[in-house]
Image (cartoon, rainbow, N blue to C red; front, side, top):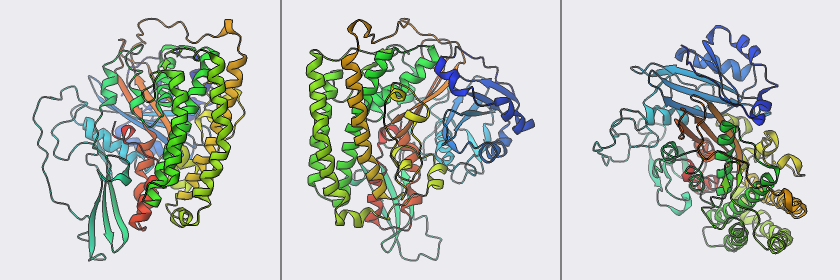
Length: 557
């Protein structure tokens, strides 16, 4: 089946990222399963039959090294439904390929990819929930965001959003009731209002004595409809304020960059170098603020009280937010990035802002040492987190884990270095990894990343301070209205505070996207929780969940 898509303009960054991968060799490797080839801005796509999914993905994983299923996008066309598996390599994420699986509109069914990539289980459930695409041999094909009683599929063109919905209140069912090995199990609800689940997450937990024997995260409690809102907004002016809300814990500039990187590739926009330095400075301040709240709330999770670590972390986060407020004008919903650059330069007087940044950075080493004294060198803390929640690197890759969660398991993967953007490749910094893979390692990674982010911020300030005034270009010349060519497709990602934050956009020739898909790192990182929690106790479950640093705004999008 041919998709009939055409390629749009390719930016220098997009073309450079795929030059070293020989797609003709990949096509020869796959053989007759390839029906057609598409050109996306970041990669090529191979169109296959719905019953060739497992064979194709297995070949790409085992023989071509594509061990990272970073995202799965489902969408509807006038004549078909389509699932796209976005594949990358942990060793080199610039080597990418898309596997495009079209199905008929009257019977949208294809093979499930779960037997090849565990992370596909949640992604395919989402596609089934929102578009009604069914996946044969899926181990647990049921709704993931909406109630089981929901009528219809919200992303379909034919969906009637005025129809009444009935959500029944059903008694709790023990999934182990037919398992005679566990005669005395207890069903325990953790959340969705429990403080230890960081918001509206519901963990349906089954205990055998004090041991967790089954865990099912119920994630559909926000329904923020961010993707659908972006599909109704214009590229140039209206989408950018929304990314701040996906991960609202100080990570807004990192979120904005994910959209900017995808849209700028889509429209062929080149960002001025000076603006790239400003972006890098703001993004690393956002990362620091996010890691500080992750460390502080994790201390609260583990100790069960408003500890000194919690208070100190919020104190230091406020200092970072002061700097972000000076830079962007906001403390939370920054809306600082613009397509082609940023909204404005450093605040006047520049010398005062630079001095404030350096003053904060000068006091940070002593504060980080204090966190180590309070947490990582604390015997009581160590007893709770060392050798608990152990995540094997192979399991992390199967579930598409990224960010500190992956790097805490020794996976040396960071898009700032491995798929360079912004000003990162001009600076001196290191990717932080720890090998133990336990809750303790993930804390260490975030503490050490605070030091690396501080180094990046300091270098950016040095560069900005010396930049000639006449060359301080903060925005490219961008048309007032952007209308990318029809059926132009791109998937781009950045290294957000919690991992790989990716955006897939398909254009239809208008000034709004035809499809806007958000790949939130917390979605994939959270999906691995049952693997980590089963066999541990409830206190270990809370410590393990907290170590993942999940934010529900990018899980239930």
